[in-house]
Every structure is written in structure tokens, then in C-alpha cells.
Amino acid sequence: MLITLLLWLYISLLCLLAGDLVRMGFQKLGRTALQVPLPFLAILGWAGLMNGLGYGWLLVPVGQAVHLLVLVGLLIGGWLRRKYWLSVVRTLQLPRSWFFWGVSVLGFLVILTRTTHLPRVADTGGYHAPMIRWISEYAVVPGLANVNYRFGFNNASFLTEAFFSLRFLGVDAFHVLNGWLMAVVWCWALLLLQNTRFKPSEVLIVVLGVWYLWHSHWRLASPSPDHPAQLLVGLLFFLLIRQMEGPANPSERLLMVWLTLLAFTIKMSTLVALLIPLLLFVDAFRKKDYAFLPRLIAVGLLPLLWWLTANVILTGYILYPTTSPLLDWFSFDWKVPKSVIEQGLLNLSGGTKLSPVQGLFDFSWVPYWFTQQLVPDQLLLVLLFGWPLFASFRWKKTVAFLMQYLNWFWVLVTAYAGVAFWFITAPEFRFGMGFIIAALVVGYLPYRRAVPALYRFGIVGVLSLALLYASFKRQASPLIFPDSYPAAQLTSYPLQGQRMYVATDDPRVIHGIKGYWSSCQDAALPCSPYYNPSLRLRGSTLSEGFKAVETR
Image (tube, rainbow, N blue to C red; front, side):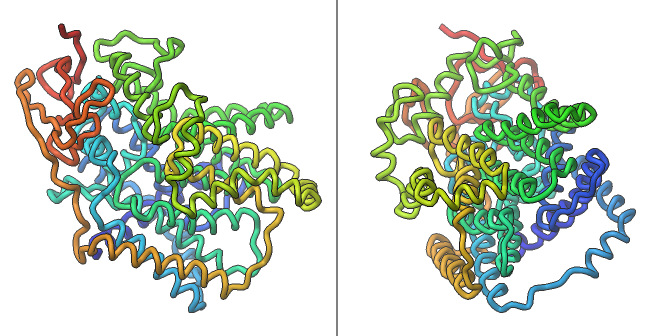
């Protein structure tokens, strides 16, 4: 736990310095002041680092040289901005409430202990950890998705995971970044929980911090991209509601567009969030604010350009995974075969619905799926899909709230569109929690009531205590170093002068592929979770890439 705390302090320092640069950049672009809380500033810095590292990864691995370059650059920037940071330190006021300190420490211990545990998400051994290692050791490799089709997902959050893994120190790679993100949002939520009156946007942050911890606590040791992607979705709705509360802020609007496209590059399950920049673009066009339109487009392209380029290099497709002929533009020799993509899409859909499915709009799986959810999650689903009925009974309050916040309806429709997309495509809570929380908060905002501080902190404290008990019951937390990835079970074979490793812990044949869900963990490269007889090197070195050839 000690090393994890030190790493979190280091991450906080770099991300705050980077966040200040991001904030100033958007202030200049939007030509209006951009005031954000310190926790949000740190998250903006993390997002800015991710975006910048993407362009660097096209040329070099995200290893020691890149780390030192970024570190020196941020320290110089921080020194040049020292007057600002001194003013921030002088104006900081620590809470004096014992309720706050007691409950926040409980929740913080939940996050800390869970982050030090063994990663328990199956996908982490399958492709998270191996892909992060590739990013640490190699620039973008042509055809890497032929080694493991899931490497083609090109999850942008793996860039910052590689950056903060500190593999170049010669120790086991660290995986503490998702825990840090959760700790930042948790502390922000607890600070707001002290308020006597809440703005609608503050309600969202409180619920996001508390409810997201409830759902993600056991996954915090995993570098899963679902966690940061859905947190960003929640923060996007925080900004949307802020726009609803007061006059439109051009700098915040540009920030929303950038964060939306950044979330999309982390996980394509955030697709529906693209409605946000679309609505902002239409609004600017409707108001004939033609000078603002190029800036909207520019900040949207900033996360996309490197990501689309890396997609083509990794997979041979501009977007992946898809078999649409509309997106099949290239004929590179490293292109992933369509049969592999089809098999992957079958697994992505069927695995989350817990039953065989016949097409996207086959809902025969719903009754069994519902019975397999935890009781609190079943209650959440009832509240989520029962909102229209509740709103119709309280129609006077609903209409009054709409009259007060005219854009509330569009924010609500966007959140529920995200929920619908999640439910139809891959209904596992970690793939849609940002949209779910946003829909619940935005939908029930008109009916909120004041709750005494004692009750608020009491409820959150009991929840934190229960989660802390569950954490220690699951695994004793190491006091110094966090647990590394589990050891992989491997075999190997020669591949054109290289040694190819294959994971062997899952012998099942799924959609024609043996060992489809096997785990390479953090094993030496190259490693695949399944044997691919068609795999070939494109040259004599791994950096030249991989291709698939027809076998008879």
C-alpha cells in the first residue's frame, strides 16, 4: 500500500501540472474563463497526457525516454506557473467535519486496498496487460491485432497505463491508475457531500463517486478501459448539466467535445456520447456562430487523428472491430481477416447477455439476465426503466423543472440513448455505468429532497464500511508493493526466428478458436491467448509487424 500511495502522489503531481496546461489551452480557444475544481483539473491532466502520448506512440514506445521528457516538460511548466500554484496552496481550505474525514478515509481505504490486490478481471490477462506491455516496449506495430484480435481495440487509456507502469525501473509493472481515478472522484464527491444545498451538477458528482465505487471496487486493480471511459461519460454529463444551470460557456463546450472524442478512443461503447458534440455543432450552426465551428471541429480531431492512424496500423481498418464494407478502405498485407472479426463480435455480444442470441434485437435473454443480477442492481434497473411511469405520476414537478431548465429534456434523452445502446449491445454494468448514473440523476433531479448531513454521511459511511470488510475478506492487502499480475501458463513455438508464446490456461473451443479467453498476463512478448496457425512475421523483427496468411 505504501508504494501505491507514493505512486498516487506522483500521478497527482504530474496530472495537476498537465491539467493546468489543458485548462489554459481551452480558455484561449474558447476565449472565456474556465473554472474547474482541483479534482477535475487532475482528471483533465490525465486526459491531456493520454492525448499527447497517442501521437508519440505512433513513433516511439511509451517507455523511459518518453517518461523523462514529459516529466521534465511538466516540471518546467509548473515552475513557470509557480505563482499560480502558490496561490492555489494558500487558498486551500481543509474540511473541519469529522463526518467528512471519517467517511472519506473509509472509502479511501476501500480504493487503496482494492488497488493493491491481484487484478481479477478476465480481460486483463487476455489483452489489457499484454497490450500495455506492447505500448511500453514498441511503437505502433503493423498487424498486431493478428497476434490477438483484441489488440485492435486500440484503447487509448492503455497509453497512460503504460506511462505510469514504470516498467523501465526494472520492477513488476504497476497497475494503479484506475484506483487513482476512483480516489480523485471519491474525494470530490465527499467534498460536495458537505454542502447544505446542491446544484444539479453537484448531485451528479456525488452519485458518481459513491455509486461508481459500489460497482467498480473489485475491479480497481485492473487496468480495464471500461473504468476511465465510463467515468469520463459521467464527467461529460457533469459539464452538460453545468451548461444547463447557467449561460453557455464556449470554453466548456470545446472541452466537452474533446472529452467526448477522447472517451470514444478509450472505448467505443461510449459511441452514443457523440450526440453531445453533434448537438453542440448544430446549436452553433443554428445561432450562425460560424467562427466557433472550426474550433469545435479542431478539438474533436485532436484525439481522433492519432487514434485512427493507429487503428489502420494495428488492424488494417479505420474503425475496428467492424465488417462493414463502408469502412473497408485498405488492402495492407497486415489486415485482420474478416472471419476473425466476426468471431470476436459474436463473443462480445453473447458473453454479456448470458444466453445465446439471434441478432441484435433478440430480447429473449432479458428475463434470465435480470434474475442473475444482484438485488441492488435489480433495484437500479427498476428505477432506471421505471422512470417514465414515475415522471407521469409527478407530472407537475416534471413540467415545472423543465420550465426552469429548458435543456433538461435533451440532456435526459442523451443519457437514456446511451442506456439503450448499452442494453442492446453489451449489457454488463461496467460497459454503461456512466450513462446509467447520468440517466438516473438527470431523470430524478426534479424530485430531489434535502437530506440532513448526518443521514447523508451515515449512508455513505455504512456502504464504505461494508466495502472495506469485503476487501479484506477477499484478500489481505500487501503493505509495501501492490500485487503484480498473476503468472501466466504458457507454451511456445518458433516463428521465423522468434519465440512465440501461447497461453494455455483455457482449453475451450469458442467459435472455432481454442483458448479464446486464455490469459498471457504480463508475459514476455510476443504472446497470444490462442494458437493461430496462419500467423506470420512481416519481417525479421517484431516491430515490422505481423500478418495472417491462408493455410490449407
